[in-house]
Length: 549
Figure 1 (cartoon, rainbow, N blue to C red):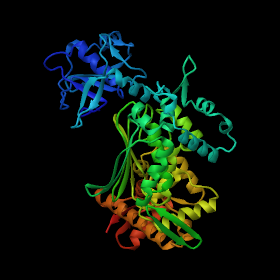
Figure 2: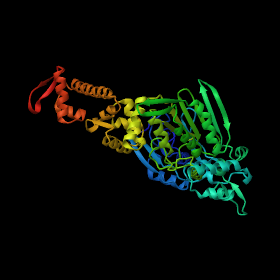
Figure 3: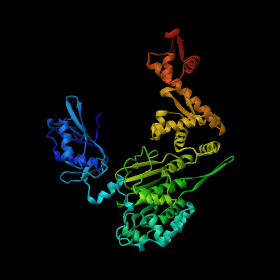
Figure 4: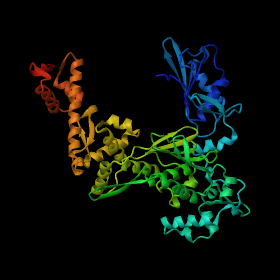
């Protein structure tokens, strides 16, 4: 099926008036390769109308050869002819390149979105190469010497604070016994020149640099903290420049007065629920500074309004990471050396799974799933203000105590969705959660096995709801009965709707297939409707059926 409009990964080229020349085609191929990859369609107008490829480009073998010979390094593409009525469209598939690609006449191009959302091809300038290579994990900007920096630009007080943080999280660390210079060398906070001079690295300046030196050597390392009331800022710290050992604590201190807690007490369960879970907030802040693109100017922005918190940082997701696989992909960083130091010092989650903490803390507190979005310019995390749900928080707390371990983030996603929607099919769970089906399937099996979730029906119509044991343990069995009753009512409605559209009849076999249930369950559903006088059983044997009365 052909796309209907252009995007960052889709380009249409018309050949109604004339064939596209090689330079135009190769330029668009290079731009796609230097962005996210995608497809170039020859024979489609900008508005999506198919007008057909020119005769010159119907030979796709020649087209592939021309692209290969006119790109540096040479690029292999895959082409296909797509018949559309009496016309033909040629699709050229381009993979995102792991290195920067140019045309043979030295044009280096990329794609970006204009303000109206339509794509355009623009130059990829040399100063943007670092950003592109970092996104592809081919270059670690954080491990480079900081421009114009000297060893005296590192702040001894900040270094001592870093040592203290390591002491709190790694009591056995031999780092604590090192001299300042050896400490800096071991963490690669400095680079040693051939003459023995120590020059701070980007990581060194970010972690323990003097504020005025950071502003000079790494001018992109800034943050903004804003609290909005309507359209007006109540708090607006527009340009924070601090070493990260101070930055995290400063932002925490600014945020704390705007993040009240609510006490929940239910029997032996006693917990405080904040508008935004503090640990999730801390992880989100560390992630934003750890994974941002320091080769681009722009602040990490923390913005709080009446109902939500957003944290944005310059630079899109790195290669291989999307909002769909964020929870399951192997941890990767745009700035590996900075990430290593943050883990050693205990600021970042050591397994690299800080996003799991953000999700789990929000969900366990009864909040909605956090939402990540990314484009070529920035990553934005949105967290909705938590409205305390005493029953759900109590249920999660009791179940984790009963099981003797925290529930996985996948299990929490499922339980949160079932709490909100009461009863969902597997397909609906996958759709609402936007996470990989395999992860949800595994977590669902565990939840059924431990008695937290009940499966209803079979086949494609199988659905899930919180089990009666969960409601009973939380003294809320009446809710289960209501939801179970709602499920039965939905089955009745499905049967009657089907019969209405099927000439007024339905058989037991049809009910089994329709509901995805066993013969005896389908029979009971039909018998229940018969007892209510809504359908009448007619005939006998294989030809028997139920008729709407």
